Length: 246
Length: 318
Picture: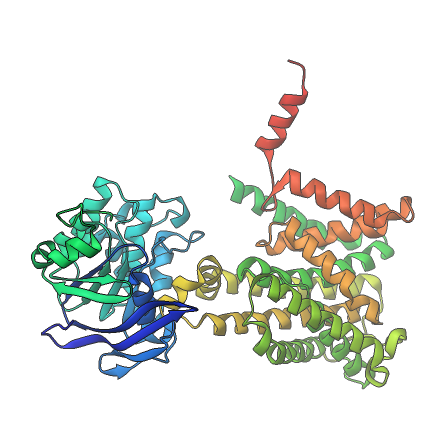
């Protein structure tokens, strides 16, 4: 699974075992500058584990992870974030007791990039410009999701890893999310772990299918859609086309 | 509206504290001095519990370090109050820094138990290290402090109270300003969502360590003020009971308000020392009732007006 662009984030032979379960099994992975790459797979396929291995929330049992050519396998999540790796969580992770503006400032604190003007611009870009003084805890689920993406971008990352950003969003918020992801800077590498096939199709240039911790297939969304192995194993024999929340 | 009410209550409380030497007798003044000293301990517990999200039963340890440092300095002839205060704060911060290396890596109940252990060890050390602490007898006949070079010693209750009030006010305002700054914002953000902070590149453990050391310094100031006020110190002043009462007070006040924490400590001490005197042997019962009442009647340190109205409505006719 490789991209033809400058390597930003790469995993080499990465495995992670939880007691008797091999959640991720010798996965090789490379994310280039400007990549829009989705990882899909049924529940338990190892998608979130892979994402947590890349961000440092989990340590791999074997293999190495590189960020901008540097081995970061032993680095903490904070250390990787300081090197330009940003992420979002399955449940929107924001600072409930702070205003949305302070959320942005806190998220962008490192590296002296915490200018209030930039933070306001970031909020306006995701449609929360009118909510700068509101507490993040009072926002709707969709707004919190968008705020978290804006917070992840506030640190001007090289790579952005999104863990099921469409989960729990209604149609309007989904539209806003896709618009927000389309508006991401070109040079930033994006890895999207997602169940929602419409969002995957709208955003990703390439898709990787994980099954039982291993890479089953990698290709364009169209190739994956027409891949009989994916239809058989990932989607189930009774289903003929990859769709939504399988 | 709520902010205006809080500000008004704080202002009224401040004015009453300033006017206290003209309003109350000497015994009450010395009790209020002690409340202010414990108030600094409450400020310290508020930093850790309310702003870092780490409830603690161990801030009596740096409080003890501050108290015994000030007492030892005074007995050695260094009687300048502000110098005692600064050195006590530094000693308490250094103690917290050493302990904090291990403690700030824990969270939740483990942190509570770890700090309880630290507090208990400090109290045990105070009781057994006779050469330094005087053992269970404590250190007596501590020379009176001087408010500054060349001034008269603080012997008069009113003078002692004024000095303690001024020091407590300066420290409280300094802590409030620090918590209103970006440092406070980062602590609050770490409390709200540690994983998000780490994912944004923040060294959360480092922030907690700095907060723990700073909170230790504030507790140390409280300890020094205790010695200035009562001119003796014993292990009873720094034991588990004090730690539990202060955590109780901070919880009543909603855990985030510095002024609320100090006021709640005053209420707890008043209940324990004055109200309980009228029903001997029932002090803990009164404190228990106070805590239960605060759980039902207060939310984050503010009255649950709607809940009370609802209950009164239900209880009323029709």
